[in-house]
Amino acid sequence: MDWIAAARSKAKEADRQSPADNEIGQILAYSPLDPEDGAWPAKAVRAVIETHHSKDLQNGLVNERYNQRGVHSVVEGGKEEQAFSDEAKQWAKIVRPQWPRTHMMLIALAKMWERDRARAIEWERKRKLEQGL
Image 1 (cartoon, rainbow, N blue to C red):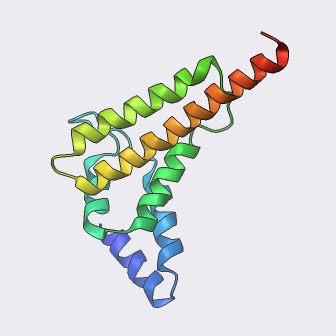
Image 2 (tube, one colour; image 1 turned 135 degrees about the vertical axis):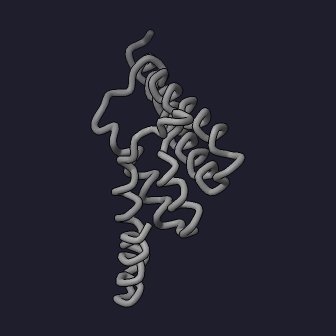
């Protein structure tokens, strides 16, 4: 918390708070699952999200978590994307009572995976049409 507060203060002085918050969020995306409740991100990161109320920090966190998957092929009607979405929704349920901003961030992550799943289904449908299947 002290490091984040100091970094955000210096970034604000330099009129760079938005990109700094985004970068902080990207760093925090590497948080492990919380050992107590099994949800992501760990409670210390949830506290940062709830304390700082920064959309840029949350966007950096969500986008980096999403991008951690790396390059991949979409197969099997988006089953993997559905699993990722379901996982994010489960984490959202766990954190909802105590961490409302984190809850909403996880719902946004789940929606990103759902959009990917919808694209995967559409891509497979088009591929089958083109192949005459």
